[in-house]
Amino acid sequence: QPITTDMETLTREVKKFATDKKLEIEMLQVREEYRREFLGNISHELKTPLFTVQGYISTLLDGAMDDKTIRKKYLKRADKGVERLIYIVEDLDMITKLESGDLNLEITEFDIVELIRNVFDLLEMKADKKKITLAFENEYIRPNFVRADKDRIQQVIENLIVNSIKYGKKGGVTEVAVVNLTKEKVLVRISDDGEGIEQQNIPRLFERFYRVNKSGSRAEGGSGLGLAIVKHIIEAHKEKIYVESEFGIGSEFSFTVEKAGVKEEKKEPKKIID
Ligand code: ADP
Image 1 (tube, protein in one colour):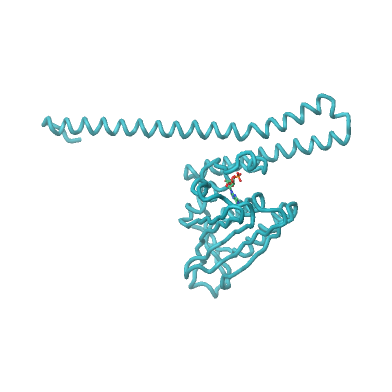
Image 2: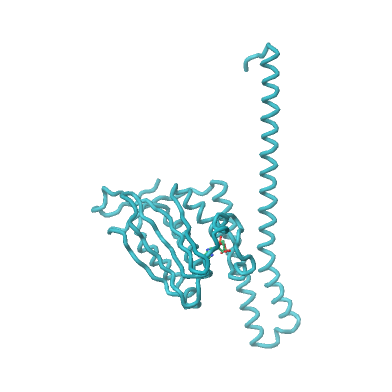
């Protein structure tokens, strides 16, 4: 450390120190505010399903248990509530990891079309319940290999399709397309003909716990973290995500993914782990 002798430099350094300290304190205050808000949101999200589960259990203990049909019905509802709690806790775990940068991407080369088909199989029952058709269109030139973290991209596609079912109209269609965007990139597009989103709400969609229609979305069973998780995963890949929506008509979410080594196209795809 150089020893400061002249008054001017000393004053400047003291001032700088004070400004740095002030900034540091402000930063800490912002962080504290953020933490408080996050905790407040979490307890709020957990309360609803917890009270639901408790309600059914208390009613059962108060005598409803004696009736076989009611017993089964209430136990099923309590079970659904617990399932919902698990989803919320899993999403919280994921967002915490993503926000603290603790999530290491495992980059491999995989078939994006096969992945989408697997997600369709997983979500078929959910879509069926609303009589929603899951349609797939492949505009990408074969082979369909991309380079990304397969599990995380699966989660992105799952979250976006789940939303298109939740906010889609009964008897409607969710269409997933893989589009050839540039020499290096493909675009994965998920569109629905559901309720759509008003323009003024679009910029806030990817915020944690943001919902256009609070009670409606909670009743659909989400954690309010789905799109925040999607955004973090796409950004961790240094890729882009887009939204287009028309209120009352439908929404379209799309994101880019890197194509697997263009030069290696003809060879057997190799697993690459960074
Ligand atoms: P949630 O658990 O509430 O679904 P998300 O983060 O996944 O949380 O989505 C945030 C909000 O964005 C939703 O509550 C909903 O208002 C809106 N939204 C998301 N996807 C769609 C969609 N496909 N159509 C209309 N609104 C949507």
